[in-house]
Length: 538
Image 1 (spheres, rainbow, N blue to C red):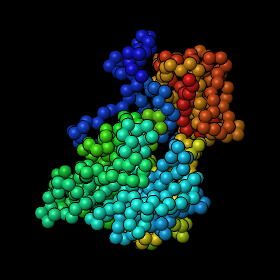
Image 2: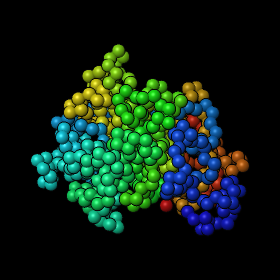
Image 3: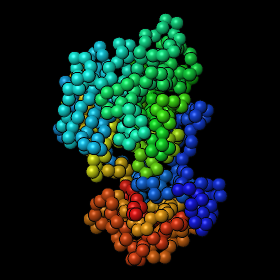
């Protein structure tokens, strides 16, 4: 929404709250193209309540971080992990699923699910392809493209051994049809020179390719687009923390209309971390972030996920998968690694892995959340007992299908038979809830909100109300005064369990009175959980 298109009255209200210099709708920072702000430690990125009014026209508002909580009392937050599909794994070692990195997309024209996953035969690293009608049962079509195994679509040069099967579909209306699909992976097309100098082309780093259909691919002739300054060949190179390692996850950043890439990157001695047991010259595996306007020219990577003082042991990270946009929030899934821990008490320290959330409101500062979002399966005989790393997410009706890689015994244990792919399912947008405390009535007040242009707006809640409980909502102006007609006593108590429970007040145009003004919503919760809210309407 452009500042000049708003009414003079509403423009004045916005300026009163935020200062005349605030451009309405601009709530995100820009990353300098040269990466000049340097490294940004993750522990400096704790999210606080928004200090500027939030435009409700940008989609659902979720309580994953604290951006939407101005004040609260009598409530606590709870993380809600997805539930495993009972028929897991959906793709196994017989299909050469030797890595947990994959992309699943749903074709808008056919409704079929498409999977691209890492394939490793022991001597050849590549990406294989599968299809499904329901996202659960997968078929391996004969593509008739490459070699003896016709499922392969990007086959690695003999020097390439890295991973990543990040695929982006820009849609059938994309301006350059032959580049509709975009792929990124870590690669190397030439042998390392003995003098350690980076080859002009074909050196190690982030490789990309383009395709009109997701099957027939053309590698970019200028590869790599980001370099890997590996310590084994580039010892002491000051650019090493800005290079990409062999795990790459790409996504479309709908906040800033750019492509984003999470990259596994090494710690350096100057960081002061103690050496992890299987990290070799990486010391610790960290995560960096880069972005691009065209998928070819990428900004200098910057660190965004690092060990923090709160962390125990020799914690490391294997990238961030399945990043999605929900409203003005980016949500990704951090692959956490402890190579210093055993899968079972008293057993060998072969490493464990699990997944937690990382979020951002600007694609610059990323907050890693402390609770485990998706954990290992407790049973020692389970195929995903040691590791559970999320790689891709697809919206299916009112659910999220989450695809992950699981390992049975440890990080480096028999990759040819113990690394398989599974499915977990959760209700849409129910990552984290704000819950009323037992036997208490909880209250939560948002920062300033606004919406414009909707003729028949309605407020809906993603919430679960237990039997005997209720949720009521009221609105205050930017000075804290309760607005007439939208108080708790005017609100019909909400009950039930739904992702779009409508809020109604006694007034006929209950929400229309809030149009074109800054207001705060206040929620009263009794024996209830609130995941988020949205303003909808034409």
